[in-house]
Length: 54
Image (cartoon, rainbow, N blue to C red; front, side):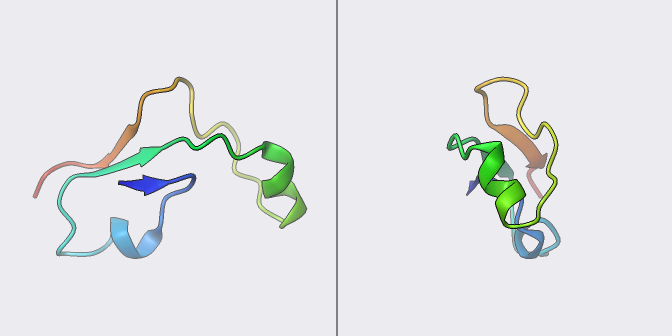
């Protein structure tokens, strides 16, 4: 599981199995403050499956 935003090193890794992204309620203002426009990453409280089991 990865928190807040996807980590490209995990998504593209050949040794990563099932990978979920979980919301930790980072305010959108924080992302904007550091120059990131991430849009609506989460639409509900459930973790998102980024990569299925290998």
